[in-house]
Every structure is written in structure tokens, then in C-alpha cells.
Picture 1 (cartoon, rainbow, N blue to C red):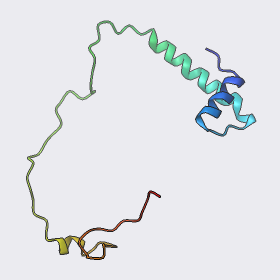
Picture 2: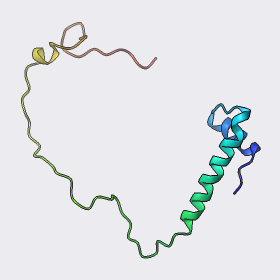
Picture 3: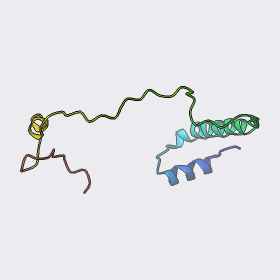
Picture 4: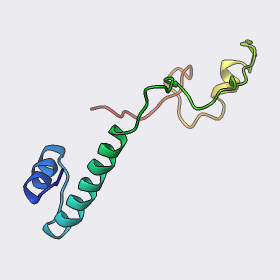
Length: 97
């Protein structure tokens, strides 16, 4: 499939990506190459290939789930850059308006 200037401009608009006029040819070529590569992948015979969830066949090492005491609230909050008014919790900057 050939990606032309019109398609590139529409994709840029829909994805809210600013593409300059001098970049359109390069983006068009890149997208065309990607689609050609995907069409090559579609032709690969995977009839006798079992589906995989992971490329690793060995199980990952695990550890026992143990509760390990690590200190009191005062010890944990000692190095906190900021706590709440009662000095009971970590205080973080507001990130959502």
C-alpha cells in the first residue's frame, strides 16, 4: 500500500502530530515501508507454530512472601522531604488540577 501526502496529513491531524511540509515525503516513505513489512509478516506460515506467552521457557525465580519489619512510622518519615500537618503521612505535590 502506498501512503501519499493526503493520507500523511490526515494521520497527522488525527494523531495531533505536527508534520512540516518538508517532512511529508520521509514520513510517507517510512509508513509505506512499515506497511510493506507487515504485509510480508502476513505471508509467514504459522500453521504449525504453537502460540507463546513469553520467549522465556524457564520459570522466573521467586522468593517467599514474608513480612519484614522495617521500623516505626517516625523512623520511616524521618527522611521524608515533606509530611502532612500531623506528621503521619508522606506529603506529595498535587499533580491533578
